[in-house]
Length: 212
Image 1 (cartoon, rainbow, N blue to C red):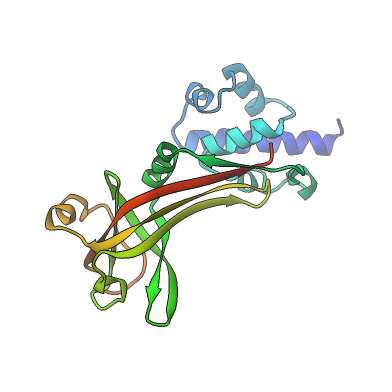
Image 2 (image 1 turned 180 degrees about the vertical axis):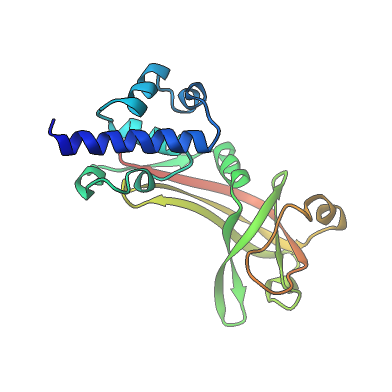
């Protein structure tokens, strides 16, 4: 192993350690998240090492990063995804966990000039999805109209990712729903967005693509 390769591996180990510490995680907790032994993780953080593709993906996910983010300073050749990706359906329970962990998704609905797709900040209330919008927006006028909610994460470096889609209807939120979520959803967009809308899911599906 030449000095340049050894330095790159040490840099990655340092980046992994700093990210773990920034998240307040112990090596044991990262071990639980990744399924890697604590001794292996300690080796990765402190000494030159060689990572398998599976280990790299597990570490990135455990540290709430994409592989591209985690390996940003490494040569592109080291981030090239293998050729035979696999597309797997996800169970509804896994889709729900991903939705509950997120805060920004997309909604798609029929507008006056055709199909509209826009990002929204949201939160969940059980299986319901709640977002805020302006009172004069098109979607705020809907009551039990069809809508699609979509959430995804893509890692271009490893050609991995997942996508969740919820088909349902959108309606004005009930007073009890607003009371439960009023301090949990804050739109990033400016302006007054005090109209709460609720998506009632009818069908939740998801797919995950992986190259390892």
